[in-house]
Length: 264
Image (tube, rainbow, N blue to C red):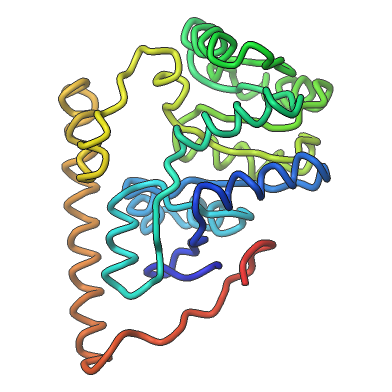
């Protein structure tokens, strides 16, 4: 079901439902673009209209971050769980190995990319890649990357590039890639490669993965999380106050579905 979270479309899906949508796209070879929504991306969308349009035009906008999940629940949306991008990647690689679908990895440094692919092969021995390319290509090389992806006949494309670069890449080229299921995975290649450790499960459940990332990479991550988390808290607080003033006796009304191929 598609809903609106503070003006941003979100699809209220479980992991199993999301995996089934991806599997269906790969079987039918009908394009389905998934975007994972976290607090940082949501905050950046508020000041970047191009990024906001890129996200809104995606077929599935999944709840990736615990902050988004909690915020949706506070505002009365029936969100039951998050679908973390790194977990969805693992689930879909298992599907690929079981059903013979071939993924394409795009992003990260050449070394991290090779380590991530090797780790995936070790975890899923029957997995076969359609192709791969690191994320450090120049603008003039972009069309060549698109041609390589298209000629690979990949069943799914996982893009490990930062926001908003991956969203811009997909908005420009998704109709030319010829890949049924497309998904941005952010830093998931680093996790798969083992160069970045995932937070322990209990920390994930508490919604403190961001704090664990700061612990691992304080020089790079502390300012990002300090600013985006603070801004998000302010945006959410304002929304809660507005909702309390407009709906003092109950929850807000039903949110109509947005223009999603899967929403309803």
